[in-house]
Length: 224
Ligand SMILES: [Zn+2]
Image 1 (spheres, helix red, strand yellow):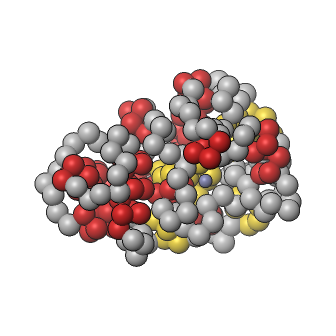
Image 2 (cartoon, helix red, strand yellow):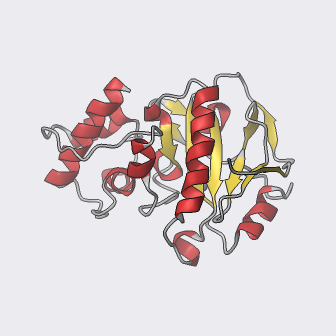
């Protein structure tokens, strides 16, 4: 069992309701975990998350799950906006695309998995609502990025994954059914989808492979 260290952040407020049905995963995107922790606890920064997971697997708890942490910003998923209201947010330490994006160490992912498993046990969060920041804000965010092991997490019961390719339909319709905001430019939304569900093909192009995978993921979300 990984150790959890309580490091309270002042950056939280009350949730409008106690409905907690989304889990949002991020990378910190800063040069070090310490720098990220400092920012997430700085009242002037007005950002936070419920948890931070260091590369060595140490878990920090910054905000009580029953309070609203400020991690998602303007966001949208399956018709819901403002995901901070009803999500738990985890910041996973990684320099990110700006500072030298690198693979997530296995010991870190083991800690993330244990943390997510507990959160899914405590709250009625369906697997289709386990999302990355880039899924819910494709116009602003790239995290946790294409190196994040979504397939491995899903194989261990957290989130959804498929290697299938379904019968190609209207990709915009499929992406909307999965949860994406298709009011945004389509290449932007396709890129966000690929970053999560087809990370080897990060082109933004709605090609046959991407459309087929979107159809298959849609099938999964309908059942989840
Ligand atoms: Zn983020």
